[in-house]
Amino acid sequence: MLKKMLSLLLVFFNFNIASFAVKTYVVDTPTYGSLSYGSYDFGFRCFSSGNVLSNIDFGVFKFLNIGMSWEIDKLIGYDNIKVAIPTLNVKLKIYEGSMVLPGIAIGYDGQGYFIDTSLKSGYVQKARGLYFVLGREIFFDGFILNIGANVNDFSVVKVYGFINSMIPIFKEIMYFMTEYDNINYFPDARLNWGLKLSLSEYLDVDCIIRDCFGKDDITRVPNERILKLSYSGKF
Image (spheres, rainbow, N blue to C red):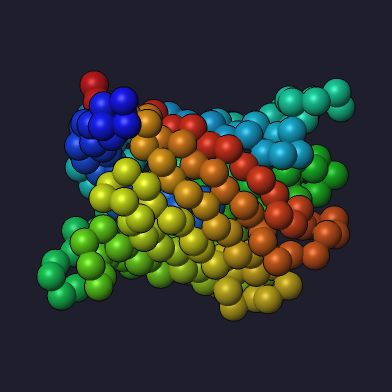
């Protein structure tokens, strides 16, 4: 019986080797990767506070991705539901990268977190805004590192930095995700961790802990637990 179970598990792992082909985000921060022409990625994540955030992205051209995201506050639970205005996401891949040089992408991410209509931005945590990111595979196969910067308020121009990585644990079936956001402005800095698991060639599940060492205040939700499901396909 044990041999049969191990054999089935091995078949499952081998079948899923094609998964994780391109990942455009690590938790909150973007990577240099982009969806290929004619492909799409649809997903949603459930926050422990009851929020649900859905998104869909399309590979319009080989170098251009366009998508939208939409957050609903307190959808899970008994509190009053708040619905945000859908936001736009765009990514332009400038350079694919080489054995020596990293890949380069620029983009715009209009999605904030935790709706608050009393604030100018509409969110407790502002959207990323314009961003620039460099990334490449380093050290060993499947270990992706991305470093970038973003500006989300042009009235008081402040440049934030971020770094993220995906580290393979078992072939291409399971990855450890880690990122440090707003690294050059400590009061807003967030450390996020997570595991990415492939259930099939098209379906991924992320288990995430967001803002691991933050202190609870009006702008922070420390140790926010998130379950994310995403489905990738091609037209």
